[in-house]
View 1 (cartoon, rainbow, N blue to C red):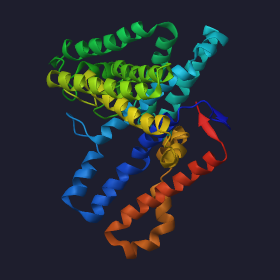
View 2 (view 1 turned 120 degrees about the vertical axis):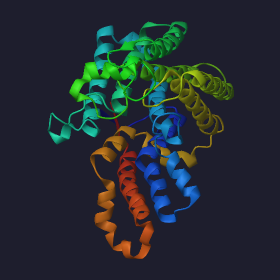
View 3 (view 1 turned 60 degrees about the vertical axis):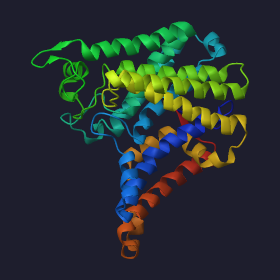
View 4 (view 1 turned 90 degrees about the vertical axis):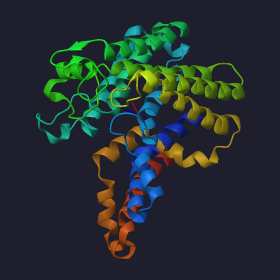
Length: 367
């Protein structure tokens, strides 16, 4: 892991969008739950539900968080692996760099949600979280970017979704019958049981075969990054990003009629629909920040986005809600039902101060 005192050559809208995405995890999900505890109205209840995952079928606002992370990682690949960098490094050097990033992300995944810090092999989960999904998506998308041209990458994108769709509906499972898109009855779940065994994470999520979906989601970001990096006028780039997002979203919705949107299986319909939303969000951020030049409003998002990995790891390893309670417990007698909201805002403020201090000092941690 390295630190850099500069961040030149970055796309401001991508940094802001990364911060926007991270804001969901480190603040907004807890904020809307806390808001509902305080107000207890039908509106706040619905908002809180939108910042939680559905039981199985369908999607909520909160479900865009993980695919948006993968998408943004993909969007950065055309910049990170520019022609100059590819020309100045041997294939061995490039692969060592990719493998190093893959391993760091995977180990960090063990730390934040793999329960490795419990030092108990019985609770350890090998593959269980967003960082590890990013590791898989990044590694194979970067390899595809290095070795294949644009048209070939499109075929890989579509082929991975087609193959994963067939793998979810065709195989016959021992003791179950044909694979179906239900909890613990899909081929993806069966493969996880075989490959991960007792080191599964204990949830309904699938990970091994879902890697095909993680790859496709990250590749959609690569296509967006290539569009931004192209010689097209910026206003056309913003338009094409939005149109691409519209097409992908409706393609996912149409496929979802037959092959449902299920985040826990990362179905191909979910990949298409969520990638469409990611394209649309990037087009909006890109239009406002990079085309219209209105960026001052995004400063707090950049503070978070340029150290997103730090924010993610710290928010999972340290309990900032508990830290806030240690300092703000005296307010409980005055705020009543809004005490949880007070602690949520306080905990986020402490984390943001750390990120702001790093930003002001030009310290940016990246893998």
